[in-house]
Length: 222
Image (cartoon, rainbow, N blue to C red; front, top):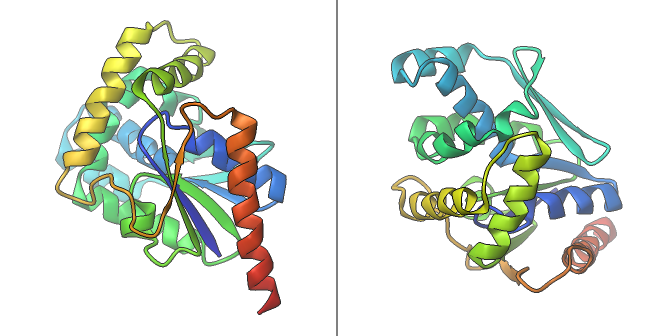
């Protein structure tokens, strides 16, 4: 079973999905982290696309969710913190907009969710990756709120950035994600809209958890 949360950067989808997964004891899949790993490979190849695609195909990417954290490994090395750097953030939309990269990451995700119950977050999961997902949410929040959330995340990893820099980065990503030719960011017609601008974290987790529990309960009865 797969349930998805889509939305723009900083809307709260990743932290919410993690909390729901931990609370309901189901698996969590962070699609954004996988695109960030691909971006890290791209940067390691000095932005040379030919070398990048060759290296990406040869790379071993693995991950697991434990104690509310999504751990990601690239060729056996833990890059969970490295992929949250501003350099990766500034390049991830470009990499994620590439059709070949999206095919690579999408197949990686589709393979892993064949087993167990998952909740995943991303930008096009409900429209392109898992159009038949058992439950879909689309989370939004105003730019100021999203920037403050991302600022806390970036600073917690030891990076010294300003709120204005983070706002500019998010605004630029919004534009790229919404206007890319390959699977642009948009709300699926059957997704539940959740505006977290004025919701507490506990409120948004409780709301989504209740919907997920309804679906799981319904599936277990059939």
